[in-house]
Image (cartoon, rainbow, N blue to C red; front, top):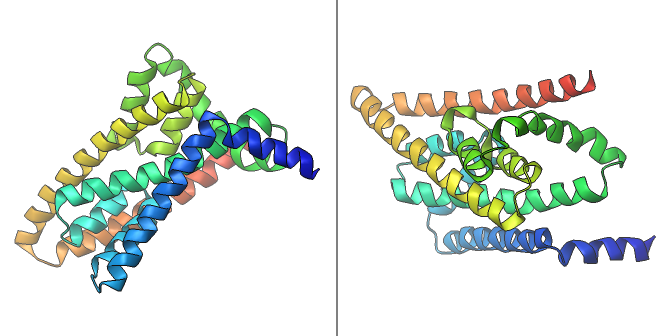
Length: 228
């Protein structure tokens, strides 16, 4: 059993997706290092970066951007941080998910937790089959679809994009989406702040809570639909 597991582990780290995973771990370590350094220097930005990261994982980029805009970070810094967190997440999760799809498809954990996600993404494959790279870019970019980088990267995988081509496409898509969200929120919050300085804070709380709740129920509905 140990020999088999070592063989699978070696196969993973010798593959393209294994390299992407290593890059993702390095991105995570760099993110944590910056937070620790800012904390040691007494710069309160560490808490904003940490909170923004967790908000983005739980509620998506729109929620984290709303929170960062409320914290009055510079728009370009928000773009950098939001894009970085998206890529950190996708560079870690994408390799694990597609490697599991190729090698552990029949395992109980995959069937229960990951198969429904792939089946959900599969529904969009036909729509984008003739425009693979552009399709994945638009899928990730278009703000109102709320698709995010994970679903977009899995779409690219099912469309047959090479791993690094997929990662570059998803990166450009999320960068474009982040720009749209950041400057939309900046304009909205500036306008609302002129009416009452407390309104942007209330809007931020509602956006974050609403997106987290929506993500929870969407995930629950997806699992329920795939059990039918």
